[in-house]
Length: 218
Image 1 (spheres, helix red, strand yellow):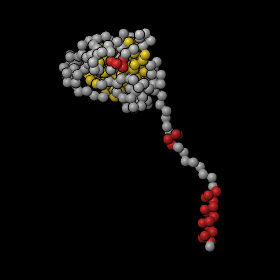
Image 2 (tube, rainbow, N blue to C red):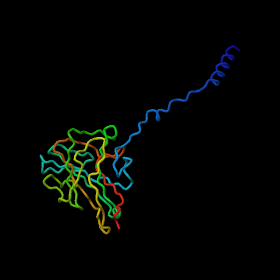
Image 3 (cartoon, rainbow, N blue to C red):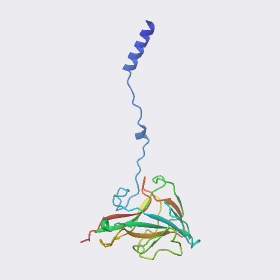
Image 4 (cartoon, rainbow, N blue to C red):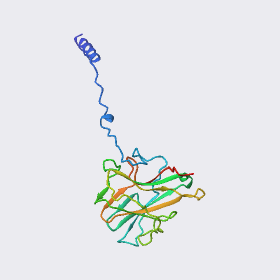
């Protein structure tokens, strides 16, 4: 009987005691990441109509005839490695649009993958002719795509924690153009080492084309 009375008292005490909810670790440890923004990416994220590179290909001034394999990692080193980015645009989607070439450069805490960045952040953007781009196994330093217009006013410096509009202009691709149209360019530097994985899983990192409405389109 004493044992029965003990368990009855224990059960009554347990039911009467107030319960303290367990901490919600998903809320207490969650860090809200705010991505770097620009005027065409006000939230820092990519809009649904943005275009990611279809190919990243390295070229090397010190190995001018070496044809590298494509990679999801870009490599830029002072006076040697550059990386060419191909972006394929759908002509129908570009009608009445501005093509904004952006470079999203989150901090290391904002990026999905670690990257290497050393130097003052001066870069050179070289544009190639519309409709041509780098080809794996073919393109080298000595055999780059045909030259085309380069961004007239690129950012003078690019550093982590920012998002840059490299160029903004009407797309100008005729609607009747068959298939996808490749636009491409290379990123080089004389004073900075920069290796990164093109990615948009957390905050976007790398080159993208963001389409916005052209106010002057008829």
